[in-house]
Image 1 (cartoon, rainbow, N blue to C red):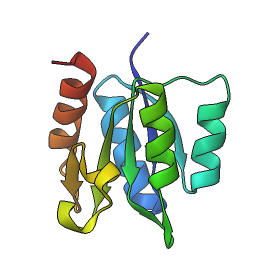
Image 2: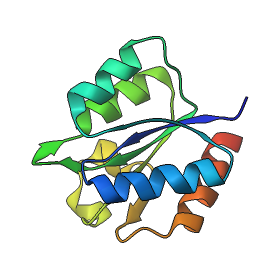
Image 3: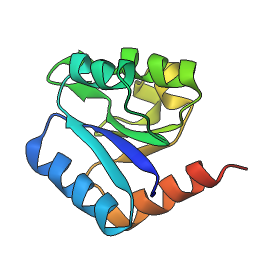
Image 4: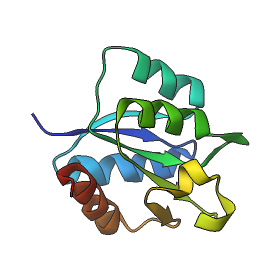
Length: 118
């Protein structure tokens, strides 16, 4: 089974682009989730993921609770945002940050590196 990636993104077309890029690279996709509540519900359920791609801001709501839940489970994540790393809370900026607009090939490469580990 391929590694499953949780996608947390509130912009429909960006979420679809991310999901298609991941599926095209052989990843399984969980979501996309457009809200913190939906992402936390998936994580609390029986679904598992190897990594996550998170938008920093979901319609004005910070995805920081999702970052915390992922970190507590030891699941790596990439923050996708229009903000710079310096504008993000430390818990978000500690990991990889990828600027919008997304480069799907770069996202896939970063995820492969995260999953492979050091």
